[in-house]
Length: 164
Image (cartoon, rainbow, N blue to C red; front, side):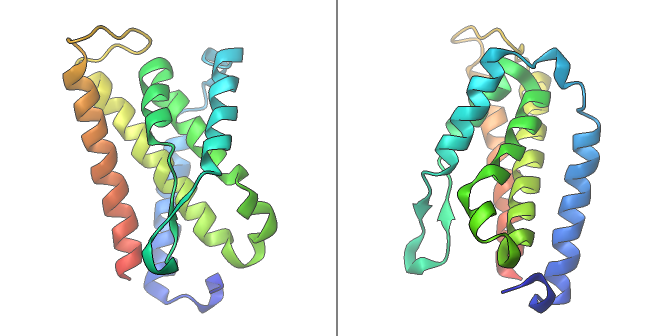
């Protein structure tokens, strides 16, 4: 379904999530601090994993398997790295083959992932995690909180648009 054919509620919601992610993204422009060969490796790995979608029952979509990598990016590079890596979801092959009919879904997906991972990165720091330095078992709690925050935000954003 094209964006033009979507109900008004979905249009407004999609645009609101995109604006929130764009504002969040603007607060994280300091990528030069993390732009290293290591970070580029994680971006490439993120793009590759994005292509390993797991189909949902009844053909209603798919789920990406990138969360473990997103969590690693949060721990190693922090919220800035998480936000930037999340936008690499736009480099999925779907973007280039089905952009005309699915652009709004791709933009929504990249936006909600950026919000989810970025906020989860801040939850990691707020709960005592130190970016770039993990010590077990001390960091189990910050990792758990970050994971919980990611899934709560991600699930809420996605389920809201699906329920519409």
